[in-house]
Length: 163
Image 1 (cartoon, rainbow, N blue to C red):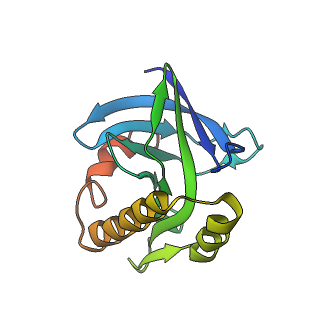
Image 2: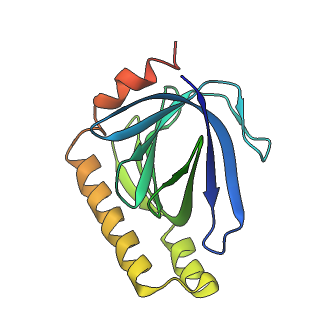
């Protein structure tokens, strides 16, 4: 298990956030990265609650699965497809997010206002807008209908970083 640097950028190429993660493994869903408690991002944020990130083999999203007691059990970022360069994975955050609330099971699409504002600010091409909206809808459907890896599959990976 090695360390992978996760870099998340905005559409203009500026840094959004970055953090180290542990390469846990790969399966049919993608590459699984662990974020143990105490992980510190480049912005100084400390991840108090452990989680795992799934970088899919293909797709305009990434997913973060959080251990309890975090209120959000599943948090999906709509992003450009990931690019890998040695031990660094980079995605561009496209603002829209899909999240599942742990206690209620409610699945929400959030940050539509930020997505709309950044379409103007960054000049998202129509193809990017279409891909982002399609990915958000696919994730909403997949999480709401309990498709894997969004239901139980991720627990196997989360067990590597959560006591």
